[in-house]
Length: 342
Ligand code: AMP
Ligand code: MG
Image 1 (cartoon, rainbow, N blue to C red):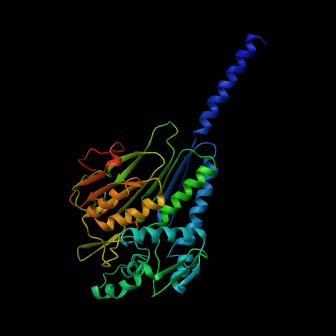
Image 2 (image 1 turned 90 degrees about the horizontal axis):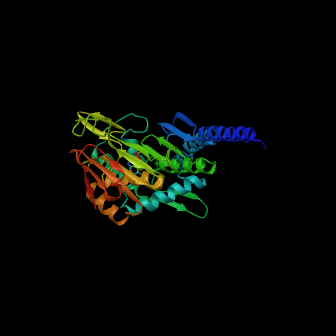
C-alpha cells in the first residue's frame, strides 16, 4: 500500500472514532408528570434514547400499580377491600417498608394513610383534625394490621388499615429506572423524580454529578435566599430529600406539612425542615428520608451511627443549622457554615 492510501485510511479511522465518541456521549432527555410530581430523565450515549422511553413506560406502569389515589391500583384495591394478591413490585416495596418500619421504631409507617386522608392531603382538600379524631384513627395505623404472606404475595389488612406508599415508592422506582438504563447499555445518566435524584456512573466527561440540595427555608429566609443551600458531588448514588416545604397548607397562620409523626398523627415537629439521604439504594434513601425526618436530628444521628455504611445525611434545621454526616465531607459543598457529625 502506498503512503497516500495509508494516510487516507488513518484520517478516515480518526474521523470515525471522533464521530463515534460524539455519538456515544449524545444527551437525551425526557420530562413529564407522573406519581403526582415533575420528572426529568437525562441519559447519554447510543442507547439512551430508547432506554429513556422504556424508563418512562416503567414509571407509568408503577404509578398505576402503587398509587393510593388511582382507582384500580393494587394499593387502592387493598385499601377498599382489605385484600389483594400483589405483584412482585408491590410485594418488594411492602416487605422493605415493613422491615425498615420495624427497624426505625415505626417512624416510616406505610399504614399511615387514614391519617394522611383525614388531613386532606390526597385531594388537597385540607382540614385540621381534632385531637380526638386523630386518636380514634391511630390504632388502625399499627404496622401489625398488615398481614403479609411472602410466599403467596397476599396481603390482608386488618382493623380498617389503609396503605400509603408515598414515602417509599419513588425510591423503588428510581432504582428500577437506573436498572433499566444499565441493562440497556447506558453508563451515564441522572434522573430526578421530584425530590428524588439518582445517578448512574459519572458525567460523560468523567466528572462527578452535581446534585443541588433545595433550600427548604421558604418562610423566613434564615439560611439563604438562594434556591439551593449546597451541592453534593456523587456517582452511582441516590440523593433523596424529605422536607416540610414539599406539601403543606396554612390554616389560621399555622403551617401543616405532609410528613406525619405516626405516634401522634400530627405533622412531625422536631425542628428539622429537610433531611437528605445519600445512598446507593433509592428505596432505602427514600424510606429513610421520611423516617429520619420524623425521628428528629438526635435520634436520626444515633440511627446513622449504627448504619453508617449504608447511607449519609444532610440535616437542615428550622434555626438554620446545617449538619452533614462524616461520609459526605468530600462530597458536600456549600458557602454556608455547617457542622460534621462523626
Ligand atoms: P416523603 O416525601 O418521601 O417524605 O414522603 C411523604 C409522603 O409519605 C406523604 O405525602 C404521605 O403520603 C406519606 N407519609 C407521611 N408521613 C409518613 C410516615 N411517617 N411514614 C410513611 N409515610 C408517610
Ligand atoms: Mg421518603
